[in-house]
Structure formats: C-alpha cells, structure tokens
Length: 311
Image (cartoon, rainbow, N blue to C red):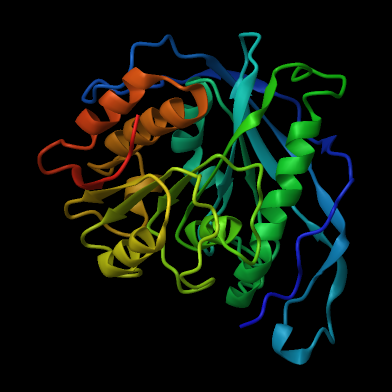
C-alpha cells in the first residue's frame, strides 16, 4: 500500500496544554541489574500538537472523500524534573487501539533514567478513534513532526530550555508503533536525526524489509507466546536490520502485557533492559551495555537470542 504522505519540512510550534506534575519513578527494579545511577524525579505534561501541513483521512480507500485538514497529535511528555541535562530524546509510538497512558510505567522509567520521552496519540489508531489500520503508513511522518516540536522546546522559553540534547535521539514503539518505528528507519520515511531504536513486538508488514538506517543500533524485544504478531515476524524484522542490533526473547511473553501491564512477569525486565540500551546508545555509557547483556539473560524471563551490538 503506497505511503500517502511524504515527510516534509514542518515549522509549527508546540503549545503546552496541561500543567506539569512531579512524581518519583525508579530507573531500575530490584530484580534486575541496571546501572548504578540515581533516578530523576519525573514530571509530565501534554503538548497540544497539530500538523497543519497534512490531512487525516478515515477512509483512505475513498481517495480522500472525507479527509480533514491537519493531523491532531496530542503528545504526552515525560522528562526529568531535576538536573541541567542536556537530556536525549525518545519518541515512543503506541500500539493499535492503545494510548501513551497505557505505557506510563515504561515511559516514566526512561524519563527517570534521564531522557525526554515524547509519546504522541495518533489520530486514527488510538483508543476511541476510527481505528484505521492503513493510517499506520502516515505515522512515521507524525513521529518526525513530533520530534521537530520537542527539539524546539530546548531553545524556547520554559523549563526545558537548554536541557534537550538534539544530537542523540531514539525512536521506539510497540506493535503498530513498532511498525511505525521501523518506518522511520526505512527508505520511505527515513529521519536522519534518529541515532537509536527500540522495537517491541515488531513486524515488517507495513513497510517491508528495506531498512535504510545502517548506522542506527536497534534493540528488538518479542514474546515467544505472542499470538498477534508471531515471534517469526520479529525475527524477520531483526534479520532485515543492517545495523548493530540485538534480539531479546521473552519466554512465554504475550503481545502487549510485557510492555503495558506492570504485573506481567516480564515487565520489570523490559523496563530495565530497554533503559540499559538507551543509556548505552544515547548517553555513551559503556557499563550499560554490560548491564543489558546481563539483564537480557534472566532465566525464564529474558533470553538474549542474538547479540550483534558492538562497544
């Protein structure tokens, strides 16, 4: 299915919707190794973002007959309440029929580790929307738009002025959001600002096997009992990635619970090992790579099936 909207230069300015609220979130869990680093208190807010250069089309098969101007992308922002930074940025894409709030534990753990995490709510694949699967094809451009707005906060008046690292950027996502993440790495929608990626229960179904980002280290995580996107889908995506990469299996892990359900037996390990990966790729923390290799080998919880990461 052809991509309906190409990436373009976008200059809209982000406006802040909700006031921030501070909370303390641990960056590691007691049953995982992690790296020795004091967690930050986390604050969060919602950015009222809208890309007026594009459109939202709930019936793409009708050739835009009921398309509306603009794409509303309210974006939940989690970031350290303390510390001067600058902090690297992670843009996270939610799964089909979900919302950023469902992944709060995971996203807050990244923010507590020293990252600015931006999680947009997509207009046609989020809970309560029309749930148009084809709109996943438009989401890589949404990610690039959101990234532009968040990076701009580093030079705008406000509590993030001077605290955003514009040179270290990761994209991450789950399920349809993982497809979106692979799209951002692909030939169709490549964003050259991205320096790392995390793919949670991913597949090549949306954008195909052509990944054009050979310099972007990527962490793949997939449950062995995923009955929505089988383990083989994640393995195929891993095989197509040309960069330094690793594949972590979650024995008995299902499609969503390891990422959006704190009570899932894999959830704590996922929070920890993804944080290890982000610290290594975005902060240059060599100890975090060692920690990742330990946290990805917890019997019955995580298995490091493939490791092509290089220090």
